[in-house]
Length: 339
Ligand code: KG4
Ligand code: ZN
Image (cartoon, rainbow, N blue to C red; front, side, top):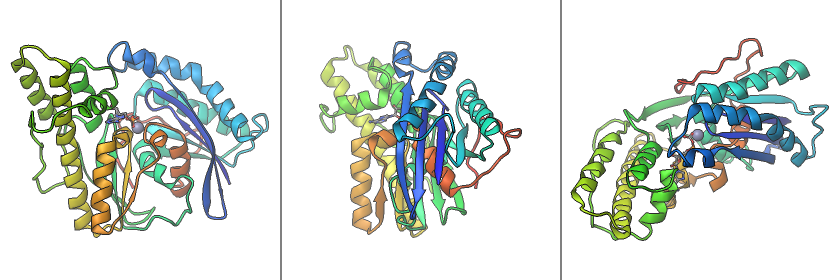
């Protein structure tokens, strides 16, 4: 089976072709065009700019995905078309959704809609035997817009355990990065600076770390950093690095604690990471170490599949066949988690 995936929820335009045969998923192509350079000039995403770039990139990106996988574009030789329908920026989402609807109609192909957040978790099923990951699994989605913990008892039974009450983990990285005058996006910039930081110079709160639920809150951390920056007369590179290390430690500590609270509570056999913040090496290392110590299998996508991409959307569509007619598909910018 060949699935065409389309992802346009934010500032990446992506198309991928995934082959599923003999119980194995094989990614044939995954093309990503990003407008991130335009946003780094403004220190954050301007939705209107992101949407315009989506429109420019979408067809060339889809065509390239066909070319790279050696599949005929004119005959549109795929079995299914799948697209992210939310959550995300409305202008960006609409480009992917409208393109997928038109292609579904024009080539008479079934259309599957995918929740972007679930897509991040399904990046773990790329280039694998479809039965490799055992359930129950705890999924942790840490991205620019979301911090969510989910329980997967099977592909059919997925429960949302909790999420952020305010800023997402990636959003906290981005806002604090901007505050410290670092290049956008803040996550990778903070990680880079933190590598030169000295441990223990600063100590920031670990919000909700001991709350008994699976909720997160990162806006207080941002306020704590604002106060600390105001106290400093001059921010030199070393102080910035020390702050970055303390910020990264706080965020990683909270995420790590909640993930394993959930893993213990639900007797998880696997822990699955996904989302842009899962590219953070400290986070990957700590969660991997704790999983090994607890005898839990740990999965994290390759770096390029942590940030937004269409390969993960195609993988999700194979397991979650949320079929919809082209007449009925809508973009839902505030889509929440659902089974
Ligand atoms: O999943 P993603 O590409 O887009 C959303 O769906 O939001 O995630 C982007 C987020 C940004 O907030 C970025 O700062 C963060 O992922 N990020 C990182 C790292 N790389 C990207 N955060 C921490 N450490 C990183 N290495
Ligand atoms: Zn994402």
